[in-house]
Length: 46
Image (cartoon, helix red, strand yellow):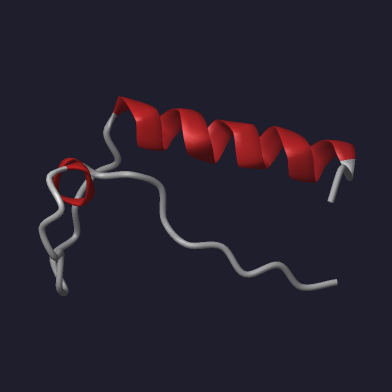
């Protein structure tokens, strides 16, 4: 099975600004999103 997901939240996303090709780090909420997705995938909940 293949899952396609977008990146988690960054500060630029939160401000409604476009990111373009910059490599931005996830903010605290984005990290929580990634960890939640990891946990769901590990448990096979999708």
